[in-house]
Structure formats: structure tokens, C-alpha cells
Length: 194
Image (cartoon, rainbow, N blue to C red):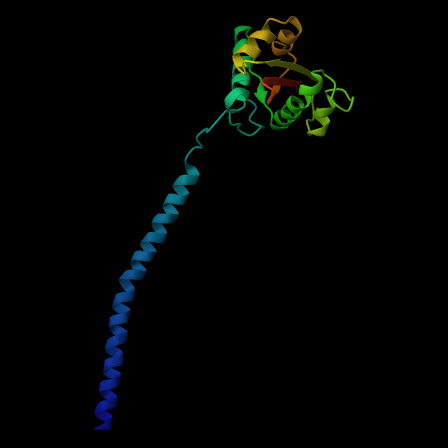
């Protein structure tokens, strides 16, 4: 009687393990197929060409740039439109120049000069923000009450010195800063040539 109970117990265990094994085998097969499909998709994604999500520099040694937006982006766009009319290459956006231009735009409301509030020359902002390896540099500053980038560009293009900076063949990169204070919008363009 005990032997029959033990045999029945082991038979039941064997039956349970068999069902478990049968249930596990298709699941493992499904997981194996899922893992293989994921590997193929990952390999396909790596081989797929990268899509350009923004502004790509002509110089492939530099990373792709995302075009700035708002008034800053409009100043960049309009500056390059003027350069194209003059058959010049586009100015490339430079992250360090953008940061330096934003700083300069915030500095100029009290003085509106090409001197920094502490008395140093405007171009010390380039070193302060890590702008390197340039052989020419320039700055345009301006304010208006309309707050419109198009108005700022019209004013700059009607001023011989500012126009010369925008259309200089010596410059290759641009940074733009825009700052609003007391009903006025201050615009800054920083240029460097590399």
C-alpha cells in the first residue's frame, strides 16, 4: 500500500514536471524568437542613416547643430540671408559664442557700449565663455522698442560698420544674444573667424 502511494506520488510529480517542461518550452522558444527579433531590429537601427534633426555644419569635424529659435534664431537666419545675397557662406552657430552673446546682451542695458560694466573690452567675454581658436572677431549691438529681429537687422544693415561685420568674409561663426529690459530689446551679434 505504501509502495503504491509512493509510486503514485512519484508518477504525479513526474506528470507535473512533464507539464511544466511542456509549458516552459514554447515560452522559451517565444522568448528566444523575441530576443532574436530585438537583435535584428537593433542591428537595423545601427545601420540606418542618421536623420538630421537640425542645422548641420558644413565642416564635418563639428557636430550637427540645432538651429536656434525665437528672436535669436531669426537674427541668425536673417544674417545668413544677407550673406547669401552677397554670395558669402553662412555663418555657423557656435555654442560658446551663443552663451557669450547672451551675457553681452544682458550687460549692455545700463551702458549700451562696447565696454563691459567692469570697464574691460567687450571681447573679454570670448575668453570668459571658452571661445577658442579664432583669428578675427567682431561685435554688433543694438536696441529697439519693437522687439523684432527683422527691425534690428534692418537697422544693422543700414549702418555701414554693422553691415560690414555681417557681410565680412573673415567671419565663419556667429553667436546671438537677445535681452529685454524696461520696454527695450537689446540685440547682440558676436562674430569670429576660424
